[in-house]
Amino acid sequence: MSEAQQEQTKAHHVKWSSGSAFLMASIGAAVGLGNLWRFPYITGENGGGAFVLIYIAFVIIIGIPLIMAELALGRAGKMSAIGTMTIMVRQGHSPFWKIIGWLSILVPLMGLTYYSVVAGWSLDYIVKALMGSFSGIDATGSKAMFQSLLDSWPQLTLWHSVYMVSVIVIVSMGVKAGLESTVKIMMPALFIILAILSVYAMITGDGSRAFAFLFSPDFSKITPQAVLMAFGQALFSLAIGVGALITYGAYLPDNVSLPKAAAVIAIADTLVALLAGFTIFPIVFEYHLAPAEGPGLIFTTLPVAFGQMPGGQVFGVLFFLLLAFAAFTSSLAMLEPAIAWFEDKGKSRVLTSWATGTGAWAVGLIMLLSFNVLSNVKPLSFIGPLAGKNLFGIMDFVVANVMLPINALMLALFTGWAMSRKLVSEQIDYPLGSRGFLLWQTTMRYIAPVAISVVVYMMIFGDPVVQIIGLIKKLFG
Image (cartoon, one colour):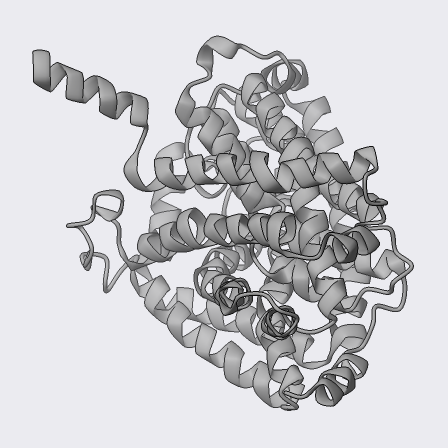
């Protein structure tokens, strides 16, 4: 693509109508199942308050600078992630860095294939709550209900299809008519519903114990694995390395302050995660449920409480509606990077939205079959971290624990070391040599790469301390 064509493509991309519209879209990209589904159960598994403090520290120290880096890269290029990195390469950088562009499209698209399956569960549970299916249910019945859903591939296919068609329709409508109009409705609704649910749960449930669990740290419960999980959750929850922020940054007006925008996105995302804790843990403790239940906390444990608590039917409907809203705004951001790339190439947004979305839907069918027809298919069991995982589990591990942090690592290295310091300074609104710029640069050059490298290593190979101790025992045992 020539420079003239690049300029024409940049002009072709629609801008956000306002800074507030951009912030709502970016917060929507970050806020998702990671906040409402994943954060509560991993907090429960890792000791509560101490884990929360470590998580918040990672968000502030590494998360906000990385958000700034992604937005700066997107706004500097004003094209899709691949288009932006192509421009950077033509400015004298190594072609190697194009990997950031490709990962920023592949990671969200691959993530969407299984993310939409989990989002489909929330749609099914909205209907179940409306029908009063949780009334009088016990733990055994709740687990049987969820397992019945997983066993039924036609039911999973229905909800997966409804969800994906909705995502495709909105993305095909464009940035302003589709993405922006949707987040302007869904994001305020999400915060209102979450605020109502958290207040109600704290009043009717065991609010004092929930507050103590979340904010009274017991550092004796913190392990290297818990620290690893806290950092991984920060990356996952903030949508760092997913490519959405580069893409949304390309639509960003030049007068928006990136440090302020990054701080607002991180604060809003963390607030949603904490409010989710205030919504879930009072119920868990009031009804003597297990906070360390794991991934099934929402779908197998909470329905038991909804069936017993005052106003449980309404509460259940609102909760799973909230889950669907959060997943939907993130899903829009997962499909958009690929569509922005096609728009760079002059392709029709409507046609490419349907073609790309249908491809993600088709792969999603394989993901949902992993819970029933293909449940015994575990093709990579000879690889340690993937041993025993079905196709859904393999895709989740590869995307969330390998590809996403690797892309975040590449982003930190490129913006910290390779990208023009003058260009970065102009984008992040910190003058060269200022304290703010030096802190940001130090994080990108040293702190983030080391932290992410440790996360990737431990995710793939396990805790090195445990490995060393095991080796010593073998040698001298």
